[in-house]
Amino acid sequence: MRRVAVLGATGSIGTSALDVIGRHPDRLGVETLVAGSHVDALVALCRTHRPAHAAIADEAGYAALRDGLRDAGLATEAHAGMAAIDALAADAGNDTVVAAIVGAAGLSSTLAAARAGKRLLLANKESLVLAGELLIAAARTAGATIVPIDSEHNAIFQCLPDAHAHAGLKRIQLTASGGPFRGRSRAELAEVTPAQAVAHPKWSMGPKISVDSATLMNKGLEVIEAHHLFGLPGARIDVLVHPQSLVHSLVEFVDGSTLAQLGLPDMRTALAVGFAWPERIVSGVGGLDLLAHGRLDFEPPDLESFPCLRLAYAALDAGGCAPAVLNAANEAAVSAFLQGRIGFLSIPALVEDALARMQHAPADSLDALLAADAAARAATVDSILRMARPSKVNA
Image 1 (cartoon, rainbow, N blue to C red):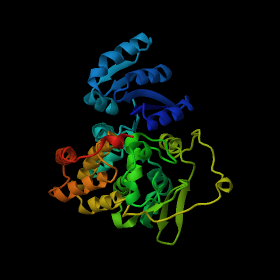
Image 2: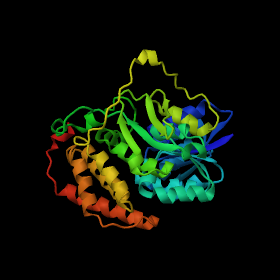
Image 3: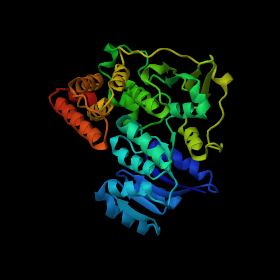
Image 4: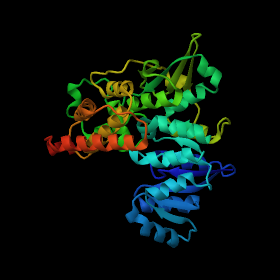
């Protein structure tokens, strides 16, 4: 029986993880549930899954969580704050951690789980973007197993089952849906709204990740992730736009063979792989009927209309703290866009400005990375404050 901690339980990935867990009560059980600030939603999940522990990141929500659990007649112990979440991620009561807290906020708990030697189902891409070298080293030292839950990296994980496959690896190709604005020119993107940007055509995701998909920053972050997960330089990691989102990634070997993993666009497949690997379990996702879908299309990404992907490659090439700067500036810019304070095209402009102004620093400690993150975030927020933008973007 695997005992699972779900960090980010009320989000889309957490919901999918709990759906898979609920299908296998004989082999999967919930030990810990963690949410950001949605106390009522967290209590509702505790009623269903009855974990030993529940934690809310917002410490102001502790009393409401404690009282809600008590009123529901649950023995679940309440916790609050990031330090408590880090401790729960490393707690001996669980052996498997779903790391699905969005953004840089998920870094410390992900590192805690890796250092404790857990099976880490990694959906928090910022942990690898900010601190990939540290996370991989911590996992290796503690004997932790990292199973990526991004559909693209999970596909590569499935196609590279052993070290012998890695020895003959030539390149990997990450697929991208292209987001809601695929095919639009840069001029056509100038007036898009937050509501349009979060309306992803294939995947059900939170607003921040949906905007990253719309700008192709999501794919840029995945390139950096792939570099750390699979040990390849950026020059051997390609991106293909594939609007059907059925081929999740491809792996090419030196003998001319190419392997691909295909499936319907549903995160439960990757989560089921993470929970059971190397075995296979039912995920709740149906099989793929290629005759019904009819065709598979591929095209190169448009780096002129969507420069965030180009910026991510540049940050990876620069190394050091550049990926942390890229991620921090992007988080600040996307937040401002979702609030209607800046336009869509201001997101890559702000990220590019942050990268241009950064001083190169090695990524040799978590403190250095967090300092670079904070500096880039503050500088980007300052730039946003100096930008004028009509409120009609909120439409």
